[in-house]
Length: 478
Image 1 (cartoon, rainbow, N blue to C red):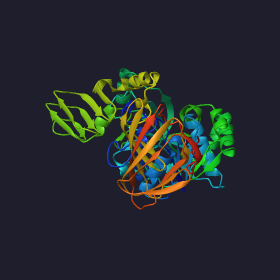
Image 2 (tube, rainbow, N blue to C red; image 1 turned 30 degrees about the horizontal axis):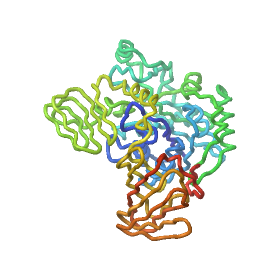
Image 3 (spheres, rainbow, N blue to C red; image 1 turned 120 degrees about the vertical axis):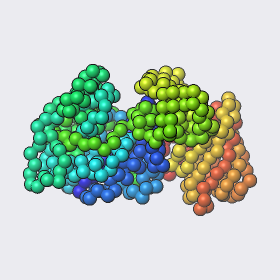
Image 4 (cartoon, helix red, strand yellow; image 1 turned 180 degrees about the vertical axis):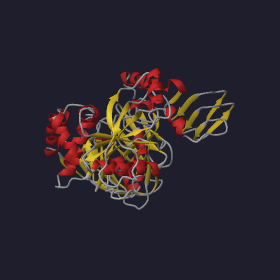
């Protein structure tokens, strides 16, 4: 059995303003109608022996991860929640311990949730080769045969060909790892490309759970101990498993590359070409996107005149451009990014400035997704705020109260069952109710279609932290 381990943490700041802290790039549809997380799972569907995925993600993204998997009819083996980021070695220690907890010793296929792979048959061929050698006890990584002297990736130097037990006629190339090297400068990258001896480091791995666990215990036993304690002291929460915060925070932060792969004598690499891209920048999205006759990649309501070799995306309104060349323009409801294509790596510097200024645009969009639905900010001012709220059929909000604001709800579609103090009222379309400060209240959608209503807040303080939850079915604090 092969267990996919999907690493779905990270924030993807280089794809701001689309990717944000509470809605990162792995949860976005950047190339097609499905999200990066969904694409990662879907490309494994037809591979023989593939089990249900184990997903490791930030606890803030747990409901979106579960909902996106549900939409592609995938029932995950588990969704493990990291209370803090500690890089890939602790995450994979947890995954290996979880896989071994039932007494089995499956292969673990480790995949970041935000990669693009164009040629799925070529990817599957590389996987078959990886399975063959992983079953022999190798720790396999997948190297991407470079197509250009890329300075944004780490590289792996090929060693000697791996010896294979049994019939290997249908296998692709597999080699020992000579060395890992950091992201090179342009001259070094050109030399690596010309030599044919180097591959890009994809961050994808395949190994037996017992083998990677043994190597982790050999090289970084403190990580294994902390990971084990975080699981022992963790707890189930609805469909998720929460790792213990104190134990996981105490865990050293390290990548599986540094912790194990650069030190082990069991390492191997399967090089392959499959149109791979980690979509780490807007330039990468231009590279993989479908071009028009002027070499532009266009998404949304976009009007162009004399624009060439550019990437333009409009999310909420008409985007019009004249005379641009080699540019990136991305429009969202609350932010617009404009950059030359050769400067997109500096987007991260913009995000750092916004974070220092404590700007909300780095954290969330105007539309925020919740376990029960979503909210969209329509108007925001000092003493009032207007939102469009959508509640899924059968979903219920927490029983709560707040002390610094009042709320007025007007139903647009569906039916709302409202708890208002000691009374319960049923609101249909075009009906409304008022919630004064301090009143205990709750809202439920008892119908079979989404409930939509307008929420008007007014008061001296309108922040989301002005909520006291008295009853909560989704495991949220506060």
